[in-house]
Length: 231
Image (cartoon, rainbow, N blue to C red; front, side, top):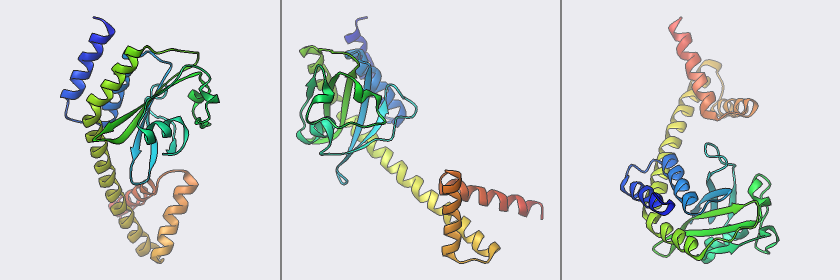
């Protein structure tokens, strides 16, 4: 099976799958991209229209935990591609391009070649795909056209997956607040402190231990449940 035929099969499977699992979707999408255009790096950004920022959500070099990178829509080659909804092709010395913005946490920003392709739906950008290489690379017109067509094909699925992720994130935030409020109430009752002091305790412990406030709240509830069980 040729790389193109393999990519078509993978793309068909991705489109047919309506589960829209975020991590799985991104990993499968990167596999398709790198099959069509083998590269040293593949980065996928999601565009937030309300905040006008691009957030890195997937990296082929760090598939399980991409670096924390957020760009304003006016920053870098990625931002330019998103704002202008145009493909950017730089075969070498991408770091010398006047649009380039160095991100210290990205080793890819020391690479030579840069291909940036916006993902759009209904004439609105929803994401950007970047391909980068350590050395000079010239992608063929066929490769670029195929990647552009792929972006159009997966745009609906990409948008649906992003939407589902936002809903899941909102649900998680509401659940976190619920647990934090419960832990705060217990601290107020057991330590005889004010609401502000209880919140301050949770926040300071989270900062000291470098974990989320939800994690500290869970610990408080667990300790209290254990104490009650042995009372």
